[in-house]
Length: 51
Image (cartoon, rainbow, N blue to C red; front, side):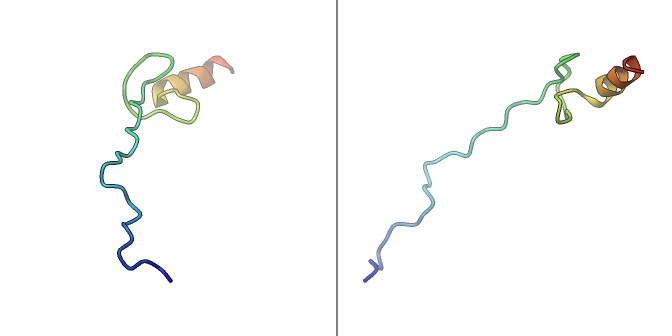
């Protein structure tokens, strides 16, 4: 038989992991980066350099 006074599953003292601040791997500008770690400007510059 289940215990009706079972503690809740969520722990109120547990903290969610803080997201790491996103910084471009090339220029170091904080902000949104793509899957490869580069901001939009650097990603476009790298694509142009490969042409």
